[in-house]
Length: 404
Image (cartoon, rainbow, N blue to C red; front, top):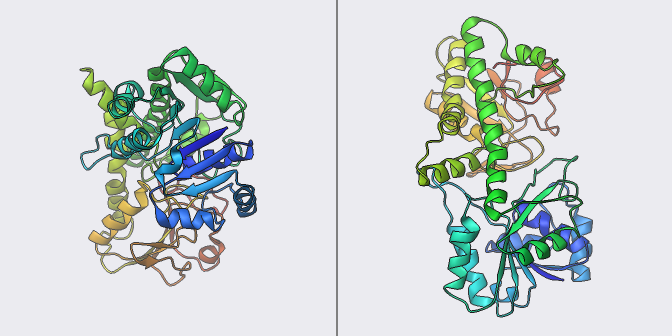
């Protein structure tokens, strides 16, 4: 089958490569010329996609990255996997989704199946994507939703073995989408409507956002009383039923957890309902950086002015170079405002806003572990008795006590 995947970010590229490996002829469309040129050279930036495999797919013709929307024409199925971030008011920003729908209407002349993987609020497929396309094209398109479930850097759960929730606007669209996804996904869940499929993705990450916020609030409570939140959570996790552990951190990052709950809150607002838990969780997690900065300041004698502080790991999670919504960036800003002299070490990120990563420094006043990539050798700090606060939610084997 000839497929087109619009968007070659973490989600779109993973999907395109998975479909190409399954034998489909895949066009990978993206407006980022540098990204497409990188892919055409056979260079992959997504964890789990090996350069050798990518080069083989390019040579076979099963995968063709491009910036040309005209290559959408002739595709039997077009999968939308574009960013759906928040705007400056933390409301849904669907401009990329709108652009994708317009490009489909403009360039595709054959009957085709449009599948949306981009995360958005319930009703997006029916009330946003379809009207944009049908108002601009007379082609008989079919429509389905199959929200993405990609977890960058996860070596256990991947495109193939992660169950996929699917539903179309019609029975035929549902069946065609399921038939397609079965070629590269081992487990499919058929939802009764696209709205259920869309909502399931939002609820998954709202669940995580709320529980992380609970852990963060618990860390504030534990600090005021005088015990370790992490130790108490580990103790609670010995219960073999009815509990799932979440650990405190400086906040949440990535495209999903900080963003998806706000899409659900927006949908609730449109229907006249207040999403109290979700909104409070958002506020709690966003406030953690200021709380942590205040706590660091107190632990360092009341002032951070001219203190040399190095942050280890500024990506939003271990094992990936992704900076989207990373709370480490907010922490850098807060510490700078407090007068600290900052550097950061993140070999996966390499460079951010013209500033390059530095090696772990033993001459600093304080080291902060935010995202403990395995590529960072913390023995450098350990062996030099560097003062270190571990702010990460991840466990570590170096013996530093958790700061939260």
